[in-house]
Length: 181
Picture 1 (tube, one colour):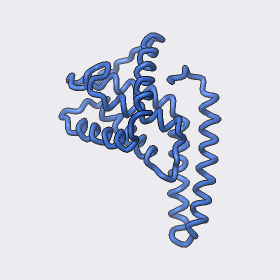
Picture 2 (tube, helix red, strand yellow; picture 1 turned 135 degrees about the vertical axis):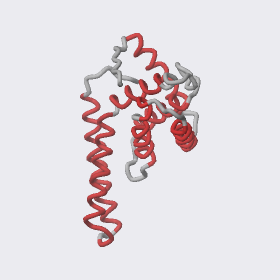
Picture 3 (cartoon, helix red, strand yellow; picture 1 turned 120 degrees about the vertical axis):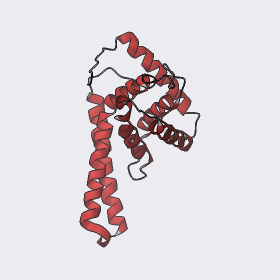
């Protein structure tokens, strides 16, 4: 038997989450990016070792992993403002003593999941652009293989990345949601 729960976050609730993310984003400025990424990988490994792992948490793990991949993809070169946002999510998610302490069975990760969902909605254009970039790169590499010169490959990848960065900026600026940051 499954149960669907639905709730609405008020403006006051969103202010609280915004303040938590702002605090995490400020902390990002004083931390090493590689340390944050290593820490979130450790947190994910620990979470995945929990048994039983609540489905609402397990369903977000691939999203966190995709954010890690996007952040660490050298060819994607995620712009600084978006990097800070992703790192802020990692800082929040990795904090065991956030709004709901993570060691509370079943619901300890509920606030983390809410933060992830809010940020995913805010960064949806960034994630869509990255998916398109990965698809382009994979198709290019599969089609051209080792027969194309490295400089030509780099030029095509760079050009596509620039186009997608511009597209995500345009779409993000037209977004009609309440800004999270």
